[in-house]
View 1: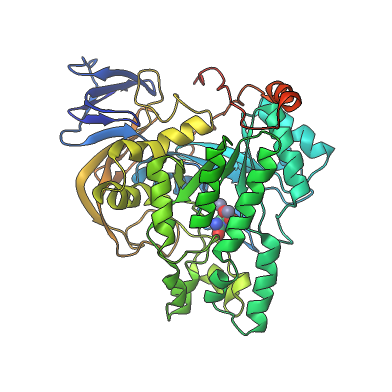
View 2: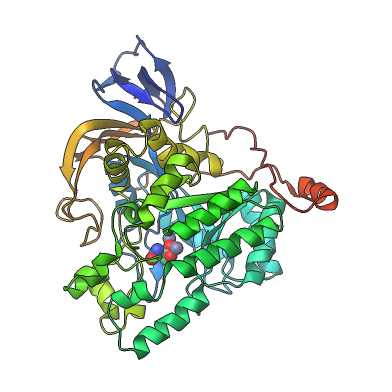
Length: 487
Ligand code: URQ
Ligand code: ZN
Ligand code: ZN
């Protein structure tokens, strides 16, 4: 079944131009004007609208077992909601408990993700270290298309690792040509601040923010960068929320370190006042880590995205309904950390970014799709509007308006952190694998239609590093991208 998207303006990370887009067999076949369409082609009228690469969300946690419960959104409902918002691929996380085989964890998550409605891939978390972990990282990289490994410097007594594990893992990833990503908060400091809050009688959601000040994020960000830098390795910091952390990434990049930063849409528009809402459930719904910050942090995050100092945007979609959040009714440290947002990321970024003149439409594409595709070696299969790329596209209506609400969203969670916000700019049509999956409010997601997408490692740079290590102090290491990712 072929689709011709006609009359729109194609917007890529590099340029905007009038063109029709012909899709067939799950791929983009032609981008140009006066494109002939085979008989039976479905026409999508994109007049007055923009045709962009489908969003890629590099940070989601569908059906994550966490803090004694399981996230309420599963891989089917979560990818369906994502497509309703213009996102056509997610990268989720395998998070094995310490001592559990990474390969076993990977197989478990692959089973859960079978129900996905859109394409997806999986980062794998290193939550402990041994020769077995070293070995399994190699197997995952070589045989299962894993080129990114996650590390939590927070969540003490659960999945938090120490600097030794991070040092080993970054070194191993470098050998493989994979990249390490980090949740950067000093978990020991958080743990002790949590105890202090409780001893002071602060048990509500406000204690969550007070126990995770920007300083604990900045410290861990600097530490993660340093542990990568001394090995000449790249590093990717997830959910950068504090200006001090953004600055640490900017300084590292200026020194030639290949450091990347990811910003969550919610940290750009919601501030820490939510934790002071009188209704406990309303405040607890916003408990996530890093927490929402005072407003002044936003400026640095937007500036980082507009300047290229920060590269990607995500949702960190990790949903818990009110009864789950209520597990921490008397003790904020028991409130499952996580919020939704996979459906609203693109609309929030377009409205507050492009409409308000903070970023251009091309930068919007860069930070919602293309940069993620390039960093995780999915490009140009994903994150591009070009012949031969996957037909994952969004027809974006810059005039369309909608008011965000849990009453109308497609996410499987009873709360929407953007409740009541009106945005101008929305996905009018979403095409996944060359099929219309969302059109004018009609969601046609198919359970299990999604594919696991391999992400080949970059050429191992260890040899280059060892050459450099003898000649000079370890510094920036260029990552020669592997050959174009073949569908
Ligand atoms: O830390 C994360 O990224 C996961 C556990 C989701 N929860 C959160 O609060 N960000
Ligand atoms: Zn995290
Ligand atoms: Zn996360």
